[in-house]
Image 1 (cartoon, rainbow, N blue to C red):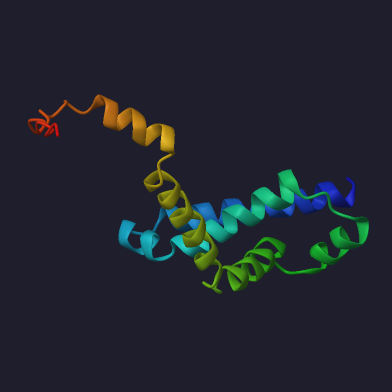
Image 2 (cartoon, helix red, strand yellow):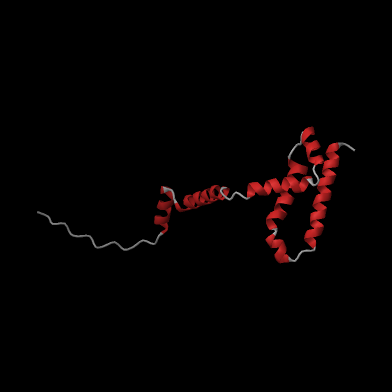
Amino acid sequence: MDKCQQLYDRLDAGLQGHLSAWSKLPPDTLVMQSREITAIRDAHEYLTETHGLEPEEVDYLLSLNDPLQAVADKWMERMGDLSDFSFALDDLFQHMETQEKKSVLGKLREKAAEPSKPSAPAREQEVR
């Protein structure tokens, strides 16, 4: 068996161990651990499906007691910095502003769709 397959097997076994432990927890505990659970799931998906590992990276990960937990812990450190939320909020609020700002054509269409109001009687112009 090649080293990459060994790593995948260890990652899968690590995930199964976590899944087994999580299945025994009450729902409120699972909710409180959702961040850790997400980090484990994200780390497993990234390592097994997304990231192409170099041979030296595989060797290093295999040298760790629990490579899945080690990667998840590093990921959680990054997620612990909530400053990135400001970028997400900026994106969200920019979408809000886009919805609020209507084009000139949109404003004209809205005005045309409004029921017409009777105009004030025209003043008779004085003829001199």
